[in-house]
Image 1 (cartoon, rainbow, N blue to C red):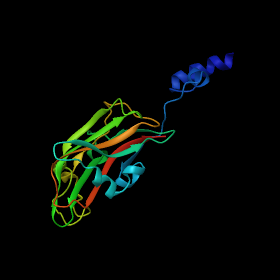
Image 2: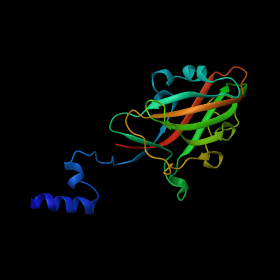
Image 3: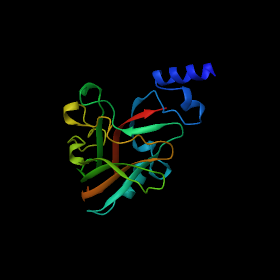
Image 4: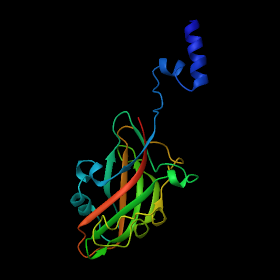
Length: 194
């Protein structure tokens, strides 16, 4: 009994353990780290450039073009770092283009959702013209190399973390299509807990 009291007291003082661990409630995941989500990390129907490009809808229509299911024993939140420390915050890159010819122009939304897609939370929205460089040769050449040319995406702490089976999604509203869009690339900063 004394061990239980001391354990609960120490657990409360140290922010964990104690009663919460012994009554079956899951402890909050720790050890956050920074990462980026890219095309190939999407779920099976969203993990190639061809699949993503095929999902881009008609002009003026928001369509889901990419999705990742949060793995077991992990939690995600879009963005990383803090605006107070620009050297430590995430920067977003996104482009759809006809390599060597022109860019598609549209708007990008980052959405987190539950597994049934019944509780979407819009986390971020921006025109894609602000999310890539001006060299249209390839998706690699359109990737900005200077932080001054990129849009910051610090950790979106105003939104909850999403856990196992939740969905991280990219939605796109096409305004003007590239001649024949043949490439898509992005790097979306995220914070991951495990």
